[in-house]
Image (cartoon, rainbow, N blue to C red; front, side, top):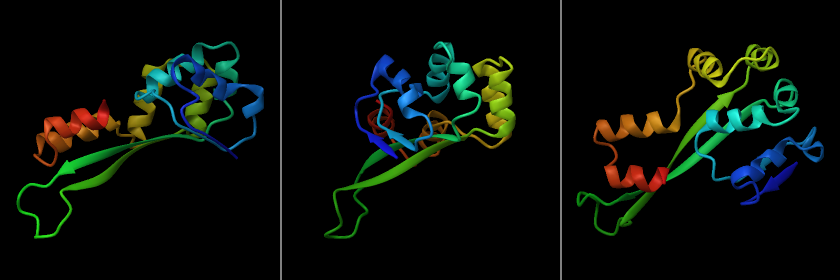
Amino acid sequence: MAVLDDVLVGEHVEEALSPAAAHRFLLASTDWTDTFALLERLLARPYGRALLGRRPLAILQQRMVVREADGKAAPGAPAVRREALFEALILSDAMRAAVRSGADTRKLQVMAAQDGFQALADQFRQRQQSGQLSAAETARALG
């Protein structure tokens, strides 16, 4: 297992596909916030399509939401609450086969949506529209 923090920033995220990462459980902190933009970048790398077509099982993202107290909190309650939202792209056998056969990220997005994938940005947008999050809380979490 490898745990990497803040080393796969920007284009360095491509190192996740290096031979040294083969057959490893990799947890990495990165500045990439769009899963499919990340996949597109990795697929464009030499040998990226072949490696992504057989290696990854999932791409997980987490964003921490810092919520301000709304004035209705009980006396002594914390002034801020922290909540985590998660995005999980599970790469099925069908998705890996699509990668190997040359599918682009739009096709992968459609396949993921059919499997129940929901992007973090969509989750935040829904929570903001329902009044569960403010625009400022959403901006802080996604920024």
